[in-house]
Length: 152
Image 1 (cartoon, rainbow, N blue to C red):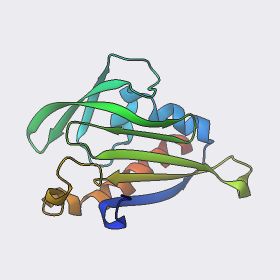
Image 2: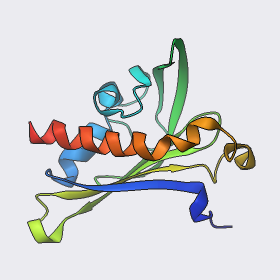
Image 3: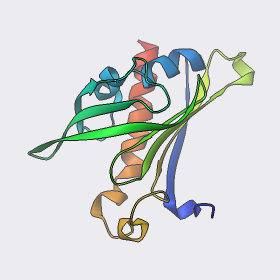
């Protein structure tokens, strides 16, 4: 069964960097807090290989409002320099797809970040969670911060 488009929240942005440069940043869990647009990622701990690879499990120090917590993610989709996605116990996925920009001879890359809750353990419950309304803006801010890191 293919996911409904309403179960995937995606935003794309053209970033002035090559796909390998962006992928190197995305696959380094220790740097995720540098570009997280939700301001919930505070740090990381990776027991597996760095950079992340298929099947790597990595921990994240998180904080929502005043509540700190830890979460363990696992890389569940991986194509070097093109695609990386991870999930945690809830089953939903955060995915980054990278498409080199032909007009710039690959000097820029279209980055699409998606929150895919079609793979969640209880996808119907996600329709009612309040933070679902903030995901598009958080993703937009993440991509903006990614762009700023490469523009610097």
